[in-house]
Picture (cartoon, rainbow, N blue to C red):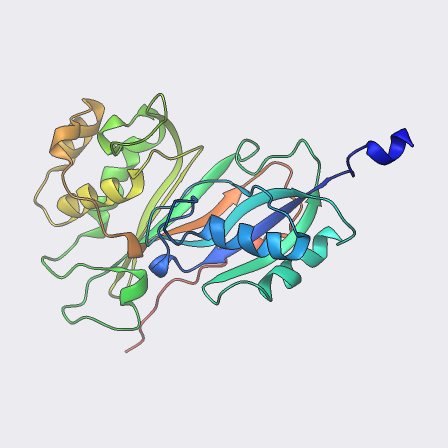
Length: 275
């Protein structure tokens, strides 16, 4: 009789998630706003018959995309973990896709177990706009951009730094220390791709950083001035953030990830225009 009073055992399910951020007010659940977290939680609730909390590896802002966001939730019942992706996709809107699902230990956490997050920002430099690239890039036609200057500006950011200059107001994070593990810029025709990998990111960090890098690439700010700005934490000089649609959470890395590399490692194709 006492055994029947025990709560049913739960198992933890990890998800690799893609979403087009255009029509979302970000990842995190918010009142009277459409968010990715809320959409997926609502779909899970329809399947299970009760609400569960979905824990993401990171929070993306309104309009920002994700190629391989990671999240987990705890569920009871007989649905095998690897079946959740297919089942959820039949309930989710077209701008969210679950790439895969898998069983993980009840001690595994999508946020706290992550070793890094990697973002890519795409800038489109042609004079004329292009309907097919606008949803995924910043159309920067105001001045020519030198990608080699942007790469030189990124080099000093490698390592652990106090990056309060690229920290938007409104964050609950108690400090602005970030360990930058990779920082790269390359050009492919009219597209400039900037990729940043770090152990974690400050609220609004990448968009503020790219906004300043565009000043460097266009010659409006020197390399020395840019480096001094963030080293001296001159936040008041960082006034313009790059628009959200050019930013994509590329992937989240773990030392103990249950998914094969083809599921999560490189799932956002770089934009290319062939002439």
